[in-house]
Structures are given as structure tokens and as C-alpha cells.
Length: 589
Ligand code: AGP
Image (cartoon, rainbow, N blue to C red; front, top):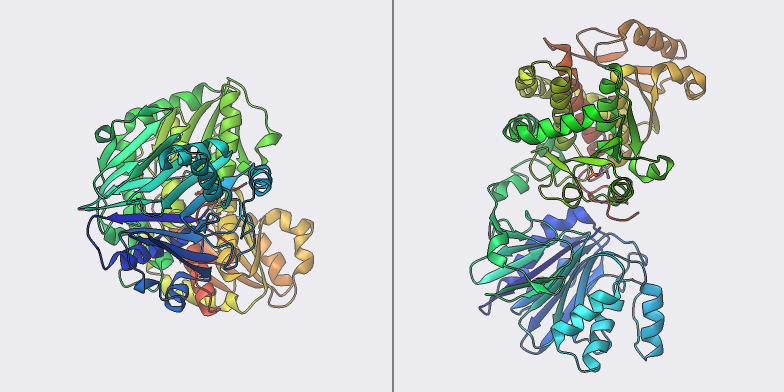
């Protein structure tokens, strides 16, 4: 994972350290095990880095006092080497003249490290990244100019990378990209290069999204890119971003997660109108889905739950729709008659990428649904569809899940030949649910005092029960498990004793069966909760939501399961935006 940023300015910019740190803060969702900054002033290259969160490390190491016209920054999610001060990026060569930050994984780093050590290079960290500055050093030693040495280093590594490098005395940031995101921001006498757009959006909305194989450098007034040895016409690739920087700030909410839950009505609405404006792509996607023998839906985590919901809708229409957890893709052999639907908020998830590579090689047609425009997964696809939730900073997916449900339901309505305009009311349904925030808070706070919980659902409710349990685990660190309500009798009920919390998700179908399950739990003295649509289950505590059209039930239930998790995490004193051991974007397998 990891977030990387490079900032380069024409002027002797006193505030460059502050700007770099602000960019890093906006990248912290990508990992927060350690932080580091490199700055270069004239011929002086300085690195300050340590384990810990950005605000704390920045204060402790007085990073804001660093000066220079060239800065690199890194926020880490550890893959190779434990999170500590030494493994924090930037990494340097033997002479501390080359500093590198990297997002990705270098598969052949052990062999490269052995070779470099046999040539006398001294390594300081356990990371895969450190081979890069030593490789550049080695190639320079052999007489190459800096850019050639950097390119040779990149050609030597295998794996995935977004890499930035600075070299003592050079007013340049070298970069290379493969499989991990890297975007250039073109500012006024100041240029940026980063893992995402929101990080530098307060300074410029003029961007250039790098593609795999791009290698080059930026200076304060020049962008140079090569791909497969050929110079790229930079002007052709510049885009203007229309979202503003406030879309990536908290705007008075205590946490991004809460702000993003409250943004769901807008996110869902933008998603539907975006799909309507991309209707030709939507039609192409539907044609592919309808003509294929099997529809394989691959995704991870929350996106998998959205995919599972879609698969149930399709199965009920007689389609052979198979939801597959992306990291388990090897269990399924696809061919030209299959279509693949890849769902991913980030559009970068490694497991989804790996599955796509394999399925594509088998000749299957690929449709993607991502939130990040032009994401790596989108670029692998025959048809690219987007949710338009805007940037999501909280690690827990909220508005993007609701938007995925909206997008998939839009597709489903078109497949069925139904009128999709009922989806215009989804935003009002979400708003009405958000009025139950106080009730959701009370349930969340009760759950926060427990150590286990069950989330049960039947039929279409099950993916939402699974999502509710995942949210709780992710940010509250409470062990919550979801089951098909009927299946709960086949083992899980053995754990139920007095006051064991059982949360029922009731989308308004199979209500009689769910009511029976409630009675079974009550008979074991469980503490029962329900989030119900239109009809009560008569649990100990119940939030009853109403919708005119039952197809809108998911939009009623989703904000409540998210708010319950949010308030239970807050009550426990956890930071819901940065849950332990997690990162927003999982670009490792
Ligand atoms: C959601 O709250 C989680 N952070 C996680 O399960 C996430 O949904 C998963 O990693 C998939 O991410 P993607 O949608 O970006 O592919």
C-alpha cells in the first residue's frame, strides 16, 4: 500500500515542508505505520523518518523546519520488514546521496540485495525498497547519467511499484510506475507527484495520470515521460479535475467516516446520473452479461458484499452468477463464454488485479465497477463503469458501498427491463434513515460493551448482515460474525447465552422466517436487535424504516449498519478513520 508524494518548487519555498506534510496527511489512509520526509536544498539531502502517525512524527522530528526546493514524503503500510524507524521510507544509498520512496512490492529484492551486497553495498533496513537507491548508485558508479541509472534500476526490479527518487544536487524528481497509482499535479511554479489526486488538490486541479511503464522526471517547470523507450506527448495526457478540495476534507464532522456516511445521498445520486450519462457503456456491459454462460463477480471485503447482493438478484432471474472472493480466484477456471464483473472502490486491489489478469488471459470479457476513474482495474477492462461517490478517505467503505449497490441495482433494473427511475428516490430513503442516527448510536454504544455479536439475515438481507458484521470488526475490533439466519441453528447458536447480542437485518422479505429466528434467539435469552424495513421482527430493540418501493430497502438499512459500527468504535475510543492493521487500499497479495 503506502502513500507517496513528491513536491518540487521553482522558488526557495519556505513552506514546502508544510505543503508536503499536508499532502501526506491526505494520503495517511493508505497506511500509517511510519512516516518519512526527504528534502534537498542545493547539495544537501536530508532524511527524517520514524515509526508512528504523521502528526506525532512531524512534531517529534520537527519536520516542518526542513527546508529545500525538492521534497519527498512517504506514509507506510508495512509489507517487508516490521514497522520501525529504520524500515520507514525514504531509503537511501550507501552515500546518502539518493533518496527513494516506494509504494508496491519488489518480488526479486532478495536476489538483487545479495548481488548488491556482494558488490560492497551496505543495507540499513529489511525493506524491499532499499535495493532501488543502491541500484541507482551502482549504475551511476558504472558511468551512467542519473536518468539512465534510474531507468536501469527500474528495469532490474520485478513486481509492482510507484517509485520516486531524488539525487543530491539535482532539481528533479525521478519517477516510475507499474501496477500502483502515480499522478502528476501541475501547479504554478510548483509540481506534485503523488499516489492520489486529493493529496495535492488544494494546490492544483491540473493532473496527468501516469500509466504502467511510464518513467521520467519532473522539475518545477518540466514534465518528461517515456514509455517503452519512446517520449510521451505530455500535453495529450493532461486533465482538469472538477471535484474541489473540500470533497477531501472533514468539513466539521468528527471523522471522515461520519462525513462520508452523510454524503451517501449525494454519492448515490451522482452514481446514477453518471451511469445514465455513460449509458452506452452500461448497455455494452449488459450485452456482455446477458450473452455469457456464467457471470463471475470478483471483489474483496465490502465490495464483495455488494457483488454478493448483485449475484443474488441475478440468480433469482435465472442467471448463472457466481460471486468469488478475489483472493480465491484460482478455484475457478473461466473461458471465452464467461463474463467477469470486477467490483472495487479503489480500482487497485491486488487480489482483484491478479484474478483479472488470469481471467483475461482465459479470454473472458471483463467489466469493471470502480470508484476511482481510470484506475488500474478499469484499465484492464473491456467495459469500465464507475460509481461516482467522490474520494473516500475513511478506511471503512461507506458511501462507496451504498453507491455500488445503487450502480448494481441500476444494471439489474435494465437487465430485467424495469424502469430504473425508482432509484431517483434512493437519496431520500437514505436521508430518512440518517434521521435515525440517535437510535443507531444507542445500539452502537450498547454493542461496544460486548465482545461478540451475531449479524443474521435471510435472502437479500444476508449481504447486508455480512457488511454490518465486517464494519463492526473493522473499526470496533469486536468479534462480529454474520450468518444466514436459518443456518445459525446449525452451530452458531451454541454460543448464545444471556444478553449475547444478535442483530437481525430485515429488508422486508422472508419476514415470517426471520421472526421465527428471533424467537429462537430470545428463547436463549439473547439480546436481540433489528434493523427492519416496513415490517417489525419484534426484537428487544428495533429500528423500523419505511420505504414505498421495497427495491429501495438496501438504501434504508445501509446507513444504519454503518452508523452502528461508527458509534460503537467511537465509544470504544477507536479512531474509525484509521483502524489498526488496515489500509484503505490493499495493493499486496
Ligand atoms: C471496507 O470497509 C474495507 N476497508 C475493505 O474490506 C475493502 O472493501 C476491500 O479491501 C476492497 O477494497 P476495494 O473496494 O478498493 O477493492
